[in-house]
Image 1 (tube, one colour):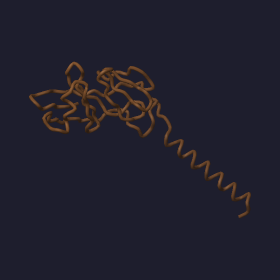
Image 2 (image 1 turned 120 degrees about the vertical axis):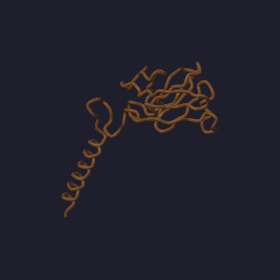
Image 3 (image 1 turned 135 degrees about the horizontal axis):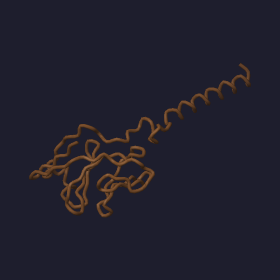
Image 4 (image 1 turned 45 degrees about the horizontal axis):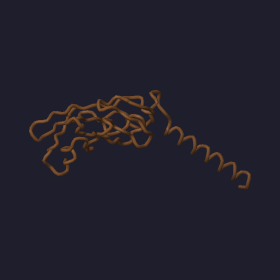
Length: 143
């Protein structure tokens, strides 16, 4: 193989590799990245023992924790709320900002109300919201 044939073969291989990578990260018709889940988990049903040390963040107004793909938070008003843990834009993990009463994505700046509604882009889809029921020291989170 001479130099020209070698460079031609390398160029074709690089082009094929680039095309395959671009196809893998292409956007779907709803604007989400293919392969990234923008919906929250389904069939959610778990109970948190609020006396357990692992769940201590939920004893403080504005505190939150993530478990099983869900963020569970205690609002500054003292209510328990739960939403999907991943941002609907590109599935990056969200945080809860109690003082701002919002869920926030540190990656691209999307924000959501405590009811899971988009406050600012780039996210365009609301979060999946889960029910919460408090019985004594047990907090049930369910779909």
